[in-house]
Image (cartoon, rainbow, N blue to C red; front, side):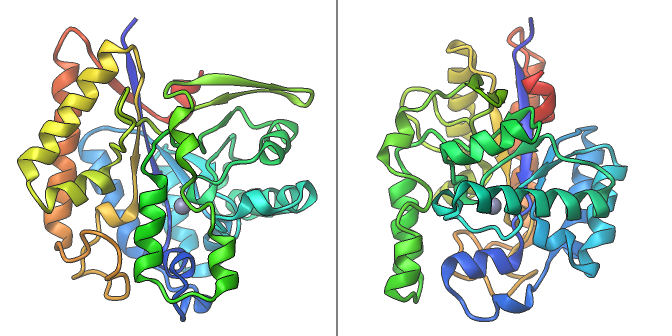
Length: 310
Ligand SMILES: [Zn+2]
């Protein structure tokens, strides 16, 4: 059987980055979805790729985002649930609060896209046993919230370094992007079993053994030092996936397609000084590495997360 790869994109919006970072102004929900979604759709259509988009309920509830979100479903992409409020401290919620959060998101996502999600990714990779139970009860087929890396605390330190937050805001973000223990979780898909039912877990793949991130935003950060190094690192990661029998689940973000020339308020995010067109060109090169492997014996073909889980 051919090893499969899946591609997903977490549709984090401008306001959710500002909110996690503790920046004022997020409360009016500034959006770049009408700009970035057509750009990403063109990119995927040119490569004949169908992927999974994890959509935030709050965005689906707002008029300017509805048509762009609908266009994702119309183009045949899978629509997943990425929570309603995009609070990376979702694991601090009670089970009843999680249930309400997910139900609210499902309702508005279905209203905007015509699709009811069967997959979930926690905001900021937030994960809890209560969330998994709620997902199983609500009939989800998979969760994709785990990110088995040792570098979560480093990413959190980076966010804290550049943010202005109250002690209360910092307390909520104490587990942002996870602890060192995340690095010990499995790196390939597996099953959760609960009284409420079974579900598949599809981790965001990290470099086998070393467990360093390989998602495109991280590669973009590496490319600030050397594009060749970043692409070499990604090739090494895919080869390691083939050798270890890991079907990679590769992660994209809107900011992989948007530069400082597209949005002015996210200067704190790594690689935002790079123009949008240069970023898109880099993502092309990354997916070409992926594609080049398909020509080899150890072929990787890209599917949506739901396809990988089935
Ligand atoms: Zn997110």
